[in-house]
Length: 94
Image 1: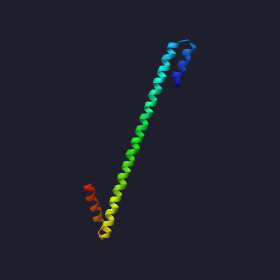
Image 2: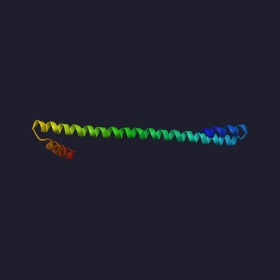
Image 3: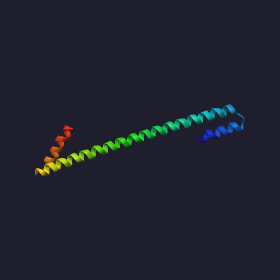
Image 4: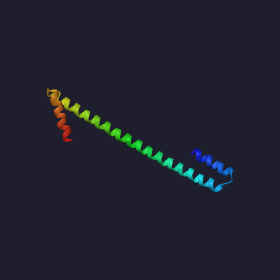
C-alpha cells in the first residue's frame, strides 16, 4: 500500500488525475481486501478456540468418567485392571 500512496503522489504532481484516481481505487480495493482477510482470520481464531475448548472438555469428561469408575471399583475393592476394563466398557457405551 505504501507503493500505491507513492504512485498517487507522483501522479498528482504530474497532473495525471485519471492515474491518481485509478491508484486511489486500487488502494481502496486493497484496504477492503485486507479488512475481509482480517475478519476471516478472526473467525478462524474463534473457531480454533472453540475446537480446543471442546477437546479439553472431552478430556475432562473422560477423566471424570475414569475417576468415577475408579471410585466404584475401590468401593467394591476391585483391582485396578478392572477399573480400566470398566472404564472401557462405559466409554464404549457412550
